[in-house]
Amino acid sequence: MNFNKEIITNWTADHFKMFEGRKYSIEELKFITENAQVSLKSILMTQKLDKEYCKKYLLDSNNKYSIKEADKNITIDDILYYQKHLKYNDFS
Image (cartoon, rainbow, N blue to C red):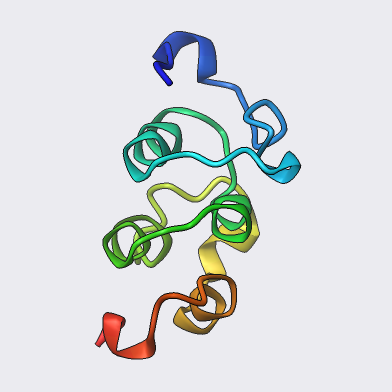
């Protein structure tokens, strides 16, 4: 999907239909995370993520990409709960 940065600036997970089962590639998720108003927790719960995405966006200690308060408190345990394909040693 090609997204227009100006159009998606205020879009949320509802606009992207994440909770309705729509899946996005890691590259699309990076663009969405950097340019839209989608909660990181929503992405964590609905999308298949890789360890690099998780480290850069979900575990960012500066909370640069946090939209909601819950985004600031995402832990490795949260990631492992929703991302069953990842393992604890992916983050050590």
